[in-house]
Length: 331
Ligand SMILES: [Zn+2]
Image (cartoon, rainbow, N blue to C red; front, side):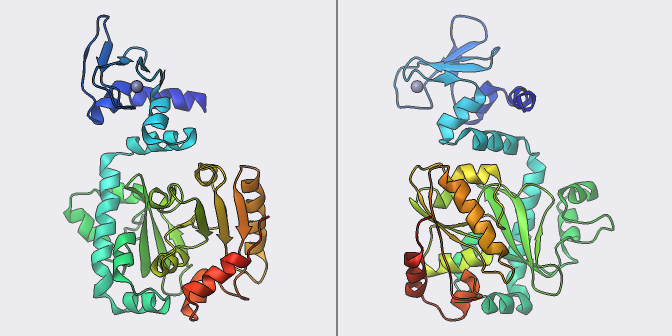
């Protein structure tokens, strides 16, 4: 781990990172030492020093200093693990993230060209076009992505490496509703929900990133955590904008850290009520882990057999859902 971190810091020199964020500096006395205005607080006289050789900073104004990771923590208000993830993200080749961006845009354009896709969204209770637009929902009909991306000049190998096509050159996503997963405004993965008989869930073979849409949810002191993106979409549509999703019931440690980045936060866990009680078990285990991290978790019971999506499709209102939240007791 610590070797990985050293390598990460070598690959993104602190000075380069600062300059990418428009930090302007001039040379200070000694070689390799620069000084400029502190990006961490308001000031008019430069007191932020960077030693490019040692890859360290120190500010005489606010008294803070350290390495690149420490800077990212302070600069982006991120916990340690997320700062590392953010930096790793920056190392993702620009063309790979551009590729995912172009793919998501392409899929978004397909959505209204295929009646089966819009019909499926209606069936799942999604009708608010502003929410769909905001989430970047698209449709992968299958069979046309490779040609489109090749026209943009992306090589077969890059498409294969990203997992967008298989070794036979076929599109990985076929007859799937697509949700782009973003982290720090960059697409890190694509989730595809099958509208046909194929296995329902599919992600590209890469990290799914942090909690879904965490940038817009993290400021809430009460957060709703759901299992699937359709649950999230209908909740957003109904006005529960404090909903996030881990795409599944197993949270990564980065996602756990995100949930616990605000002490005393209340969390409503609304997972599916599975026949085999898998969802209930997962909720309970997660709630225990979160409780020990200072979060106040509650497990929400929906009427028998429902997940948030099916509950709203069956006609539940915002008031019905709020009543379920209110009935949930803290653990
Ligand atoms: Zn400072």
